[in-house]
Length: 88
Image (cartoon, rainbow, N blue to C red; front, side):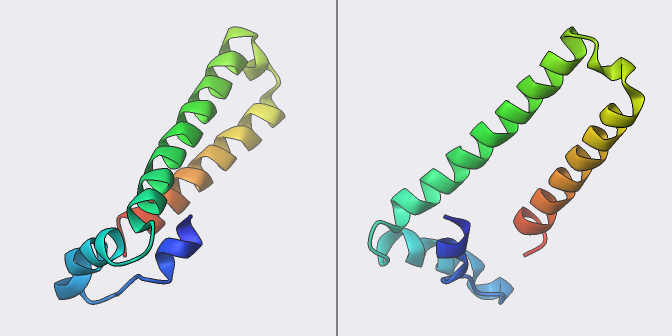
């Protein structure tokens, strides 16, 4: 869904909100693609947090190397989401 939304992306700050309105109104099923993208991303992060909670519950944090790699992956994931959501 992100690739489909990116095809209608504009980098101009004056046209940013107009491009979102264009996607929702003029693109066929644009409103559905936008909602699937937003809800899918939220569901993905909920799954990530549940996975972390499971690791804490079962004591996986005692395996330091694996836990540290997981933390690095989480920080990379959050940084990527920040770059894709806030910076454009």
